[in-house]
Structures are given as C-alpha cells and as structure tokens.
Amino acid sequence: MAIKTSGLTPRAYSQLREEIVQGLLQQGEALYEIHLAERLGMSRTPIREAMKLLTRDGYLEELPSRGYAVPRRSLDDLREFFELREVLEASATRYAALRATPAEIAELERLCNRYEREKDDAKWVQLGHDFHSVLIKAANNSRLQTMLDSLNAQIVISRRTVAKADPVRRQAAVRDHRAIFEAVKARDEVRAQALAAEHVRRSYETTLRAHVPDAFVNQKAA
Image (cartoon, rainbow, N blue to C red; front, side, top):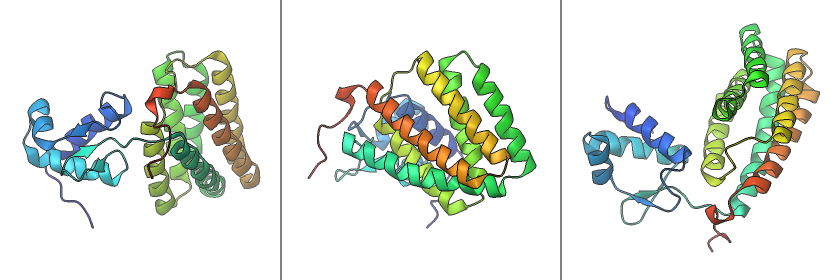
C-alpha cells in the first residue's frame, strides 16, 4: 500500500536519511515525531510520513513505544546482508550487460572515469555509489532494484567503515569498477556477473577490516 505524503515529506525524508547515513543518528537511539518536528522546524505530519517511508526502506524500525529507532545490527547481520547482496548485485550486473542502453553505458563510463580521478574521499565514495545505482537501474528489473535499494540501506547503517580510503582499497575498487564496466560494455554477461560477485566479496572483507567494533551488537538478539 502506498504511503500518503505531504509537501514537506521529501525534505524531512532526505534530511533524516542523511543523518542516518552520516551516523548523526545513532543505532538504537529512540526517535520521536514531536522532537524531530521541533528540531527540523516543521509539523509532525511530514515527520510521521517520512519516518514511515524510512521504515519501509530499511533505515528505521518501529518501536513498541510508538517511536522509531535506527536498527542495531550485529556482525552476523552484516555478513548476511553482504551474502545476499553478492547474489542480487551479481544478477543485476549480468542483466545490465544484456540490457543497458547506450546512454546508460555512456553514463557508466563517465562515472568510472571520474571515479578513477577523484581525490576527495567523500566524493569518491559517492561516485562509487552512483556507479552501482546506474548499473542496477540498467538491469531494467524494478523488483530487483527495489530489493537492492533496501538491502544497501541496511548495509549503510550497519557498517562503520573508516571514511578515508587507503591507497590499496582505492586501487582495488578502481580496478573492479573498470573491469565491471568493460564487461558490461562488451555485453559479456557471464564475466560481468562473476566480477560483480567478486567485487562485493572484496567490499565485505574491506568492511570487516575497517569497521569500528563498538558500532555492532556482539550477537544477534534471540
């Protein structure tokens, strides 16, 4: 069922989502409409609608007390998220190799080139996200895209990686993106799928090496 929204809902959604992604709203922290409405300077209606949308998209969970919270995740959760992402994103990349339009291939190349040249860490990370977003969209499978969008939201709020990308990580990621792009451009769906799966596995290993232990629950809740 579609969630009704008002004029300020997109603004509230974007601001709260950014605070979650940036870690300004901590995992497990209780959030209430009235407090957020006061802080963001808007009525409770767009806040309520935005929080429902954020819950639908995996950024929040509803609490028994009628509030919301950024979900707390364990290392087991993170492993499961990446295992699922490996399967789904590899499939999406295969379909992208089969279905990407010339415009989408051109956009992937543009992003790949910028990714290789970018020096600013935050912009570099965003370019990587943009590359994957275009790749997934190019698969032309709306259900697969919805599943991956929700899954990637869970990964974003579950991991706490070091913001500054080290040279080794950069080199590996740049090499992966270029190889994936070339396979998609060549319409080699088998190679594209294999490269995407390998890239996700490497991303998981990098996350485990760089994460902050205190950001995770030690064990999954029973």
